[in-house]
Structure formats: structure tokens, C-alpha cells
Length: 567
View 1 (tube, rainbow, N blue to C red):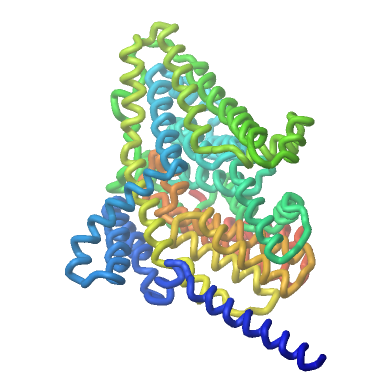
View 2: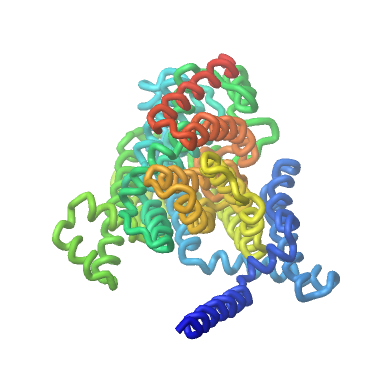
């Protein structure tokens, strides 16, 4: 009896050992490259980021970053000489692969369609009319920035739609109030992903809930993912504090760091751009200026923009609803069919929708409506209308080139194992009260280096949930660490010059991309430090979330009041 028991134990141990060997024998390419290259995996992203700040040429910097990564990968199989010319070929394949992604293709189409929409409403005088109408209400830099902040909160359901819509509407108003393009880009960027990331209904929530649910499954925990998502909101310290930071800065009209210089320049000289700035959109082009002699009507902009927003909102619901009803989850489909207008139905539908194509459809529809309005009001003919649309789309070609390069660099660094290396270095054993701070820093590092918050969440969540549960299985501790993953990824993405949302914010505000990134860093980093020292560390020590939020909000106010200077 004992002998048989020992034999079975020995068999189980041998089986586990062999299974472990087999599992270890099949590591991913990222794992292999991370072990092979180690710290050198940081070369491609750091090259691109450093060169972008030094040369102020984003396209060249991204290309060199991609090439350096391609060269390193080829050294695994080729000699140093062959890798030189094969590296160029590899770069072209990476660019093709980024375009082959249906999601990326949808983003490019969406960008072109919104550019065309902006071109048409500018040509028929809608943008100028809205600027003049808002100028009567926004009579000061404070009120102009406040309206921008409110509009950013209003378009909560998608960060791309936020960045591409708020900028063109508010840009003429902020220009008239002598607000720098850098400050406009910051307000847009800081109310895009931060608000979309914590909204109860958004294009983000499906991905976030999926990661949380997968993490729970991995540890055998039967818990509601959406309920846990709501519990994380008080712990999304960076998202909350950056929104408060903007509002405090607007109220006090105080700035510091690089943003102070930008705002002082704009107020004193009226020059909303920095010296040698290269705006991502040519807002002075004749093709996007209002046609001479036309009657300026705000409805020429308001109606198409409302079509865009309502079309996106309803389109996201319809696309997700259709995907669920025709999908394989019959239980979920029955729930939607039984209560199609419930909060649950909207949440699930938004989660299941294909946001990139829906936003393209909404923008295209809004452009068609704008063209029809211009033709009906005899502002231009059909040919001139199409030319205005094409001119608006052409203005964003530079943005599309940068997006393709940024996606290509992301693909290279993922294969090279940059994120895997950072996780292995920074995720050593730590005290439980510091875990959320370490996760936040780790998420920020990965998303800054890779330029993707989604990718960072996907890497960290499967690690963070089991680790947090092992240290402390309480729901509050889990919520805090899950929140650290989600908000850390957003902070790093918010600061990265190779992030698509940062690029789109520069485009929407017609700001020099490097000027936007440089000035935004000066504000995002202090807010992140507040999130750590007044948020995650006290919360890790057991301080209730509502107290940490009050402490953090007070710290935000103190930083702006003490370090900020009156412009």
C-alpha cells in the first residue's frame, strides 16, 4: 500500500517535471529575444524617442528606431553585413504588416474621413462661425480652456474621437485667446484616454473587462469582472488627478516648466507656435479657409459634428449588438434581446463593437452631410465640395505616415521582447504595500517604450492579478492593483512620442508633435508622482481610497499653486 502510494507520487513528480521541461522548451520569440538581448532590447524605442527630441524629426527618428530593431532581430540568423541591407527589407514588411491589421486600417480611414470632414466644414465657414460664437462666451483664456476641458469630458466614449474632434472645434477659439497650441494639445490629450479609460460605457471597457475576467479565471476566482472594474475607479489615481490638474491650472491660470514658456510666448507675442515648430496640420492652407463672401452659419459645423458624435454612439451600439446577437454566446444574446435598451445592453454592445470601422463610418456620414449642406446652401458645387474633402484628408497624410511608423516600431519591440525584459527586471518580489506602485511604474515604462496602452495592459494583467491575489486575496487589494495596471498603461502611453493617441492629439490641435510631447511630460510626470506618493503607497498601507483622493487632489492644487507662475 505504502509502496504503491510512493510510486504514484514519484510518477506525478516525474510527469510535472517533464511537463515543465516541455513547456519551457516552447518559449515565445519574445521570450527568447528578451533573454538573448537583455537590456539591448531597449535600443529601438530609446533610439526613436531620443532622436525625436534631438532632431525634432519624428519620421526620421521612428524609421531609424524600426531599422535598429530589425537589424538586431536579423543578427539572430544573419551576419552583420547581410543584416544591413536585409534590415531595410524587414522595415518595409513591418510597415506592410501594420497596414494589414484591420484595426489599424480602420484608424487610418477614420483619420482621413475626419480630415475630409474638417476640410468641408472649414470651407463652408462652419468652423469659423462656431469659433466666433464661442468667442462671445469664451472671453478669456480661462473660459476658452474650460470649454475645451468640458468638451473633452463630453466625448467620453472614445479617445480617438475625442482627440480628432475637440481640437478642430476649439483651435480657432484658443488661438484668438492667445493660448499656445501646446496647451491646447495637452488639454485634449489629457481628457482623451484618461476619461475613456474610466468611463462606464466606452470603446475601452470591453478589452479591460476581458483582461480582468481572464485573470480571474487563471486563479480560479468566481467574481464579476464589471463589478471589479467599477471598484478600480477610485484607484485610477493618474486618470483622476490629471483631470483635476487641468481644471486647477485653468482656474488659477498658472503654469510651470516648458508649458509656462509656451503660454508666456503665446500671451506676449500672440505666436501660438514655438520657434521652428512644424505643426502636424496646415491650418493656413487656402483650401480649408472659408469661401469669400459666404454667410457664416454655426449650423454648418454643429450639424455635421452632431452627426459624427451621434453616429459614432449609435453605430458602436448597433455594431456591438449585431456582433453579440449573431455570435456564439447564446446566453448573452438572449439577455440583449430581452432588454435591448438597458445599461447592461449598452455596456456589452460597446464592448463588442469594432470601434475603428464604426468611427470611420460616422465620420464619412458626417462628411457627406456637410457636403450636402454646402451644396444645398449654394456655397459650392459638388466638384468643389469633393475637392474640399480631399484637401482636408490630404492635410493629415503626415499623421498617417507617423502612425504607420509608430505601429511598425511597436511590432518590432514586441518581437524583440522589450516588454518581457522590462517585466523580468522590474517585477521582483516586493512588499505588499508597494506592489501597486511597482505595477504602476512597470506599466508606465512598458507603455512609454512601446507606445501602446492596450499592449501593456495585455502583458501586465495576467501577471498582476495572480501576484496580488497571492499576497492579499481581498477584493480591495485586487481592485487597487488592477487599477494600477490600467492607469499605469495610460500614463506611459500619455507621455510617449510614439503613441498613436499622442500623435492624434498633436494632429487635432495642429501642434508640433515634439513640442506637445515635451510640454506634456512636464505636467504628466508630477501628476504621476502624486499618484504614487499620495495614492498607491498610502492605499497600500491601508488608507481608504476616498482619503487618498482628497490628499491627491490637495497635492495637485499645491503643486500648481506653489510651482506655477501667473501667465
